Length: 313
Image 1: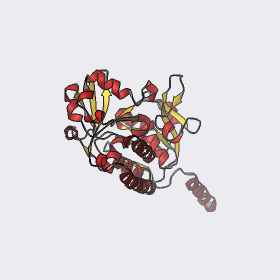
Image 2 (image 1 turned 180 degrees about the vertical axis):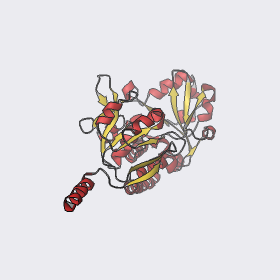
Image 3 (image 1 turned 90 degrees about the vertical axis):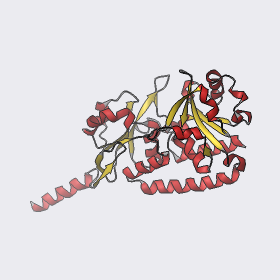
Image 4 (image 1 turned 60 degrees about the horizontal axis):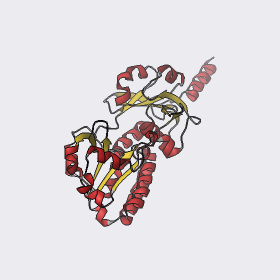
């Protein structure tokens, strides 16, 4: 009987999802006991958490998705950066429409969610599995947040490997790009045509991370972004304050936007901008697909560097 009990106990350990757990403090300040090596991660944000989990080679079983015009579900960023679709992993929920019963049925051993979307549902998610809250826009550099996340899910070594390759790529780009550009200034913006304002971006995925790492300096107005935030809204009357050697923006392909949409948007928000923005006169207002440059991703950083080198020279 004693031998049989020992055998049953050993089998239980063998089939347990994770025999070891540890405490992690997430971006919401919550201390959570999580599996040391989670085996069934469910992500509730596609172009941050899904992208990072996939790039870190962690066991991702499901992700939140979005609805395309034809009614099919897709993953922003995951599709563009990794060719990831819902034939490969399960659909956990449609963005903005949490399906707790579906999430429960998928039996995750760790749930990861963006605090802005799911902070209010944290306790309910926690009844399903340990849940960690990620804050993509708390004012800290994106790769610092990515490093946090890698540590949470036990993938610090993989992050360090990717970061080392990225550092090498940055050094190569510094040699290929114009010294005049690298010694200049930049501003990162988003045009809000609905209310005629501009979003001045302090931290915005690889868009700002790469330019900072290349050594470009931000325009002075960026220092006015409040602490703990990644962006602020400015009116058209301040458009002169965003003038720089390089102005970068992004566009959403699913909305029919292109790299040239920024010019029409600026014309509507600040008519006559062409006459006093030197970045326009130097042909250095550049816009990139938001699917590639918003996610904190080393693959996205490499794509951005490739396109920057092609466009900036």
